[in-house]
Image (cartoon, rainbow, N blue to C red; front, side):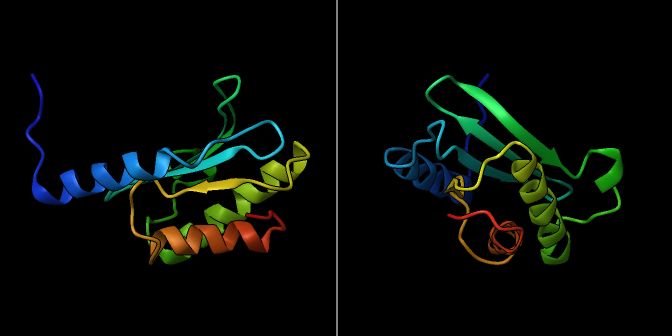
Length: 120
């Protein structure tokens, strides 16, 4: 019924819960959350006041299917989500790393979003 978590997943879940206590998205500054797996990257921009997803992007979309979940692919995905946010007149966000370490792919995605003109 429930999957027993290994030590790595348990530590990430603990970090995720600790981060979510303080990171909250509003209409002015929505929360951008990152989920990564071995094959794909997923990004959602969420307004927690209404509980609605304002924008999303992933490597499973046709135009980004060629991107790999490495730092180069994450940078391009970050620039693309930044462009989508600019279209919706969102200029500032709160970054939720979702318990992942701010290093490598997660950092590249954040830097790509910043280079598109979105403020953290």
